[in-house]
Each structure stands twice: as C-alpha cells, then as structure tokens.
Amino acid sequence: MTMVPAEGGPTTGPTVLRMLLGAQLRRLRESSGVTREGAGWEIRSSESKISRMELGRVGFKERDVSDLLTLYGVTAEHERDALLKLARDANSPGWWHRYGDVLPTWFQSYLGLEAAAALIRTYEVQFVPGLLQTGDYARAVVLLGHGAAGPAEIDRRVALRMQRQQLLRRENPPQLWAVVDEAALRRPIGGPAVMRGQLTALIEATKSPNIRLQVIPFAAGGHAAAGGAFTILRFGDQELPDIVYIEQLTSAIYLDKRDDLDYYAVAMERLCVEAEPPERTPDILGRLLDDLYPA
Image 1: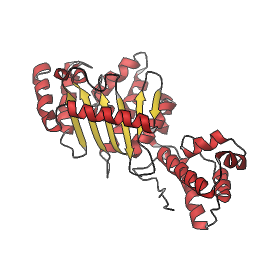
Image 2: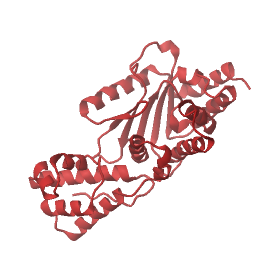
Image 3: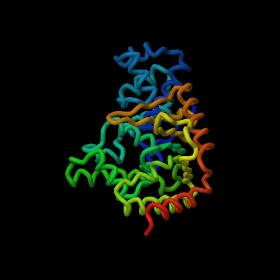
Image 4: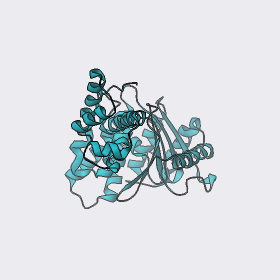
C-alpha cells in the first residue's frame, strides 16, 4: 500500500487530505472483505457514515480511524501511525477558516478542493473568473451581491478572493485553463476604469506558463455550455476522481459520478474548440480594451 504524505504543504489542505484518507480506508476495507455496515457497527455508527468518511465528506475521529484499522487488520505500527497522522492533519482548518464570518460552508469545501487541484478548468459567462479578478473588479462583483454590507465586510470578502489567487503564484502552482464568454469581458462591471484595469491584468495573466485563457466570441453563436458556468477540478493523486463544481446563488453542486464527469468533460472540450485559440487571446483583449475602454 502506498502511503500518502500528510505534511500539509502548499498543495494540500484538509479537504483533499480527508479525500485521500477516505480512499485509503475504502481500499483497506474492501481488501479485508468488511462491508460498510460491518465497519459502521465497529465504530458505533452507520453504513452511511462509513460511506461519507470514504468519500472524504466528513471529519475523522482518531479513535474511529484506529478502530477501523484494527478491524481491517492493519497492525504495522508505522502504517497505523502514518494514517492516524493523516487523520489529525485532515481535521486541521484551512487558511480560509479565518474568513468564516463571510464564507458559507458550501464554499469552504470548494476552496479546499481548489487549493489541492493540479488542473482547474473553468467556464465563465457572466464574470471574469475569480482567480483572475483584480481587486477593484472583485470589489465591484462583491457589491453586486452584498450591496447592503458594511465597508469592513466588503473589504474581507475582497481580501478572501485575493488570498485565493495566491495558489497561482506558489511553487508548483496548478494549471488554470479558463474559457470566458465575450459577454463577460464586455459587461462594464465597476465602470470603465475598473474594466480597463481588469482587461490589462488578463493580458498580463496570459504570459504566465500555468495560465491558459480562451475567449468565446459572440460570432460563435450557441455553444456547448448554454446551461451556465462550471468548473472541473483534477487532482495530482490518481486515487481522487475529478470533481465538477457548479455554483448557485445560495449553494453549490458537486458532481463526481462518472456519467456526470464525462458529460461536463465533453462540454468543456467542445468549448475549447469553439473558443478562439489561446494564442489569439492577447489580441482579442487588446482590441476590446481599445474599442470599449480607451485610455
């Protein structure tokens, strides 16, 4: 069995550590011939609790992990210690924990997945993707949804979005592949000065080796993702499935079933084909900048 390091470095977080630990517990249970019902009985819980643990959707009690390891026949001290350490690390709060006052629970899960992803593929139709927004543009977007909030809360929401972007500048950053509808680039969020700064920043972002940006022009007509924005996250560990994230006004949907993943992967591939190629993006952005928001 291959042990997964749990050092909590810049590419890990509690969400993905729970997923990794859950995947390893599932493999151990299956290889020992124990049912989910039997495992649930062992830790004074239910079959559904074991299922949620194996999917990494709940926290882990160290006692439960220890009891399950015993049930699964894991007796080697070094193996037990490594998995119990993984359980402890998986319960550690992520950097976003300090923004809990302005961060809904359903979005905390996404931040954990985003921080752990090796590849982030996203399609946006209304706004510039959050990972590529300038501070001024982010503030204008935040105000659209939280116009009644006080200045301090607005500042914290903007700071949270800016903190998210640090993952693109860390050592071994994820690859970001964004497809943006031309409508999002023409919509004057925050006014001409804000949009001028945002488009300029996008032109600069295209120079980064880990960022690929494509634009779907109006001329493309209808396209594969008419249903709206979505993100596909892929992780470096082959044990973890891709996850599709679809944000709604007051919640989010996370999809990891193969049929759903295949459907959205095909839609994303079609979007990339229908969009202008990445090498044309700086020219497209420059033309929009000159036409709509000249200095």
